[in-house]
Length: 500
Image (cartoon, rainbow, N blue to C red):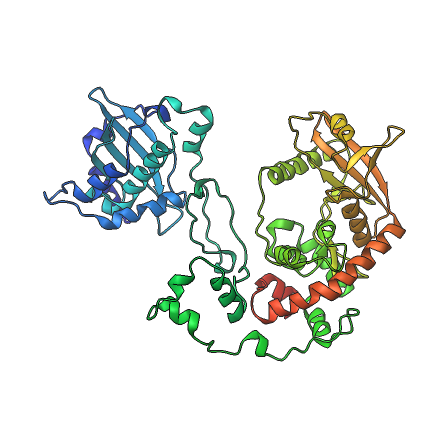
């Protein structure tokens, strides 16, 4: 928009909005605006030419609201039962420009006039105005306004917009919002393509036959019926000749060996370079891809112990993770940052590391929290206090945590703890070549404990043997098939690093 046009649009602002100076942030005074009020204004009210607006396109402004493009709403209460609302709304075409939307309505929610600084705002019913209205409607519908508004819900008004930056398509997963899903609190930015629901035609038919939707698929002449009854236009996976050999060890299957050589096996120099190029860890696509192709120290405790145990769920979650974090993981991430700041401020040196692939077993990796004073592994755990404990001594004495006290009252880490901390620490020492670890259990500057753990070679050898068998017989075949069938996509950073 040119400077002249901007000035023209700005000068066209109704005087009634220009005169307001004292805008307030108080959701308790918001109007009781509902869906019908939005429809009446955008569709049935009169436009500047005296005709009904019939601005059906503006109803799409709900997407603006769902996409968190609406900033904090401010209001002004006039003396004649009029309430004026305003908010900045992010433009759909660029993330660097904000449009100011204004609305005048009654306390009961009837919208009387609106205006916006965008080009279409002169027509009094642009999508930015609609987005502002939808945010008010959402708050009213969920009882977040009026006398029931609390300090916690009031924070929602300030938190429904976030920084939106352009991302490559490979890093975006498009999905339809589920009924009742709270998209405003979803900070998840999903990664690469997920596993399709049905791999084969037979799997699809089996699912439909067991579904209550089967009668819909049996209606002749419909697309659903044709998709259900038709034959695949390409060869099914079952018709493709399987060339996997025996999986007694990692070298017994020629197809897997070829895959491992291309995607998994690294030279010593690549192992070292990978540690420095992935120091951002979870923020690095290369780090994420390298983890998917390997058993990791942090997930090793989830690997089924018995060969007869079904490993489908573990492998699927490992290759196509759906868990993206919660309040506990956020607490742990912040606690790790605080702990490192504390250590550095007290004269210690914490060296950051990325993914550390075992030089002996390239199928195994670990991502240490840091190297403590040059020769000791640092592992930081930040448990979240609950109603049953508030101090670390109470947590250790409860017997429900991986760290506890032995019969002498000494603090120890359990080998078979439910969280797998001992296994994680031992495998991380194996991958990094270190022989000692300092486990820091952190609640804060005034509440933390150090536990020294020595490398247990016998224990590690037994665990590596077990995990190697699992990798050979279970993981490698799935990895090959997922890559071959284009269900597991590697990032450009990974392709470049591996020279694929």
